[in-house]
Length: 303
Image (spheres, rainbow, N blue to C red):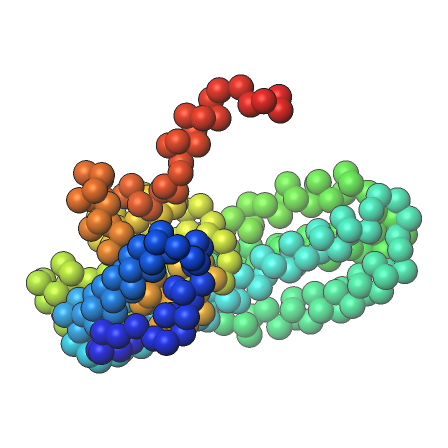
């Protein structure tokens, strides 16, 4: 984050290579991009100063306000322990399914023996894992059902799809219980942190606060943290840039600077979209979308 509104030499080099690279239109295009990048620098200099920003990145919530940074880890250990149990059941299913129906392959047989020992150890020490009390019964059931499934596959030296389907039906409710508990613990922890920050900011600054959620993967529909902030900040429910106002999802974002850059462009595009199209979300939809939809309604020559 920088307080000096300038365009970097690297960005100027990039602009110079935008197509078209020659002729009068090239110069017009480059002027546009320079004006845009200058505005990015100016708007970004306010973020984290006049306009507070909360960034969720690598399991940390970071509040940038008045030129200062506060940071707290927002995913509790309970969440990870319960997630590990769900991953275990998923892994057992994947191991047998990838074997294919019928004869047990040597690789799968070795995997079963390794996993069975791990399950035995986990069951023996389950009380020591600091799991929420309300998740103990379902966690034990997940491990026991997994143990039964792989033990039968080892005994018969075969993988039976019917056995995997039965396992899925039986283990599903226990997984759902653990997922529900993990979700509540996670959201309660987030809310405690954000409530403290909200009070510290006061009503005026809170009303100007934006949130960027940085993730390394494609956004899942209904992502829990985004749901929380959308409800808290009265954003619209849903997935996609066209539904984002104060809460922005940053796919593949691993750095704070990238999160600030994305939010800056989000704000600039919304303002321009409101002026140009009378709809602040129009530039958060592919600019070609309407024309493409209209054109693709007509028969294509290749059809």
